[in-house]
Every structure is written in C-alpha cells, then in structure tokens.
Image (cartoon, rainbow, N blue to C red; front, side):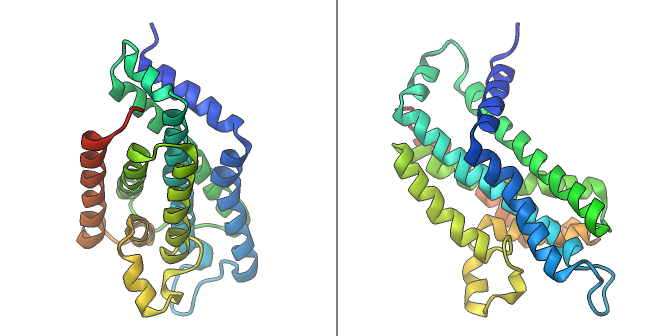
Length: 247
C-alpha cells in the first residue's frame, strides 16, 4: 500500500505542474531572469577573478526559485486549503498530519530542484558555467538554505485564514526579499542601509552562503549565515507546531 506521504507528494506535485502561474514563476521566470541579465553581462571573468557574472549569480537565481516555491506557492496553497476546508478534512483523515504537511512540502521541494536543474543546464549550455566548490558541501548548504526559506514560509502558511490573505502576506515577503537579498540584483549594488535591512531575511544569508561555497569557500567559514538559517528553521518549526491552524 502506498504511504500517505508518497500519495500526497505525488498528487501535490502533479497539481503544482498543472497550475500555469505556479509553473511559470517557479520554473520559467528565474530562468528568463538569468538569461536576460546574462545576455547583458555575459560570463567573462571579472577583473582579477576567475569567475564571471553567471558563475557568481547562479546561486542567486537558485534563491529566486526557492523563495517563489516556499514563500509564494506554499503560503498561498496552504491558505487556500484552509479556506476551502481541505486542511480540516486532512486532519480528520486516518493518517498522521505530519505526513500530509511533509508530503505537500516535499512536492514543492521537488519543483524547486527542477527549477535549479533548468538553471544549471542553461548556464552550462550557453555560458560555460563553472563550479569551484565542494559538491557535497554545496548540496548541504542548498538543503540548509531551502529549509531556512521554507521555514519562513511556514509561519504565514500556518496562520493565513484565506487564500487572499495568504497571497497578500506572501507578496509582502516575496518582493522585498527578491530585490534586497541579491536574488534579482547583485547584493553589493545596494546602498548600505538597504544591505542592513536585507540581513533580516533568510534568503539574503542563503544566497550569500551558496555563492561563497559555489566559488570554493568552505561552508564552515560562514557561521553567521548558517546560524541565521538555523534560527529561521527553529522559529518556523516552533510557530507551525504551536499555532498551525487547520481551519
């Protein structure tokens, strides 16, 4: 018999891909953004560096995929399920609530991985994308970053009563993050006061950590980024465990 976790994961993944806006903004939009900026700046090495714009920015566009999946899609879908009474029926089902929520989240993570794979393929095929880091360390920081961003999404997803309120909250979080964290524009181009503000977002730390490890830095050299992401994971788990609303 198929486990509830697998069943929910499969059904949510299929439903996600059938939603045109979710499909576009998670899988296509980050790819188009990368291709747009790469067409302007190319991937020739920066002065006195071995890497170019695409090499440096691919982790940032990975962050764009993450925030679209875990903030926009997860928050709005959970709020819509709550408004329609689907979560209430899930809770009454003879399966563990954790299996339902974990299945939903794993489906979104699978879509996130698909979006990242598209970015990597485009970077390799069109711009000779290079990687300088340790692949195992990068996989670890990618998972940590995904968990940190997802944990932030868990907070409004646990509380938003309707699809409309979920969409509003998601947008309030989404747009400042993509423009201040380095996901849409390089972080170093921001004025200092916006850099300071950006440090409250997990996405800023996720992108900076992924960029450093991508370019060859050992992940343990960046304890602040790791600590902030772990802090968000703990906060998200606490809020969702204590305040999650099924109806």
